[in-house]
Length: 309
Image (cartoon, rainbow, N blue to C red; front, side, top):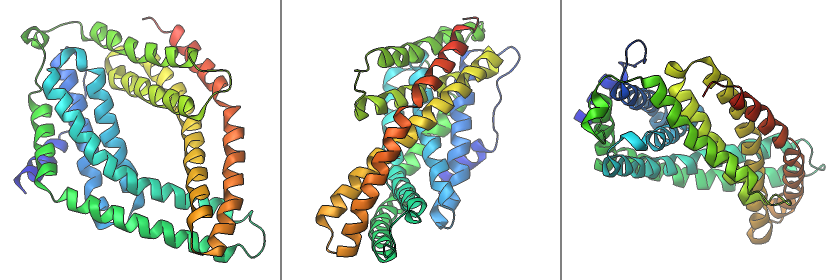
């Protein structure tokens, strides 16, 4: 309980980096703001009435992990790696619940296009998804009440107050804008190289990897934009569009795989029949989205090249 009170107190003091900041100020702000997003969403996640809260909590853990990865050159490696691993644990549990919500939304969105008589199958599919979600949510709630999660919140509180930096010199006043610009380059290079390595037939796993790289680069740009400036925000906006398109593609890939399994394994003939139809619809979505992402990448790349770093 004490850890949650401290976390809420720290999170309520949301930090903005401005003026004569140093590297420690940047780290404290990013961890504090991530903690704010997580703690802000947690009550609604526990209550279960607002499914968007699960999404926001999951995004908070992902962004924190991404920010810690971006800041790795200035952080104590053991400390930051342990914190990222704990965030991966709770983020994974949130992700399982969120994935079920996305799948429900996708099924509902395509239900109108099914042949007449498919409603019974949709209802059966929804029950199967709901059963899985209920099991995943129970595990999530157990974890939110655990000592491990309380310890994670305490680590974030400590990081927001006094992060463990790699060298003492990082606490001295520096030109933080130059450090921030340097922190952007590695995530961008990883994204660019991943696009360059993409085979001509664009396998789904490779596109998913590009999406992850785009997300990391976007979060890095957003993290340092208060000190780097509006050019970083402009590139991040372009990457958000790219990430969204590839995210929709990945949702279609996952949904098609889930439907294929249901079509083969379900005890409900109605559910199996509808799952087969939905598999084809998600495959169509996937093919359509494949044709859109490259133009978004080109736009983001042009914005990055125009930036003064």
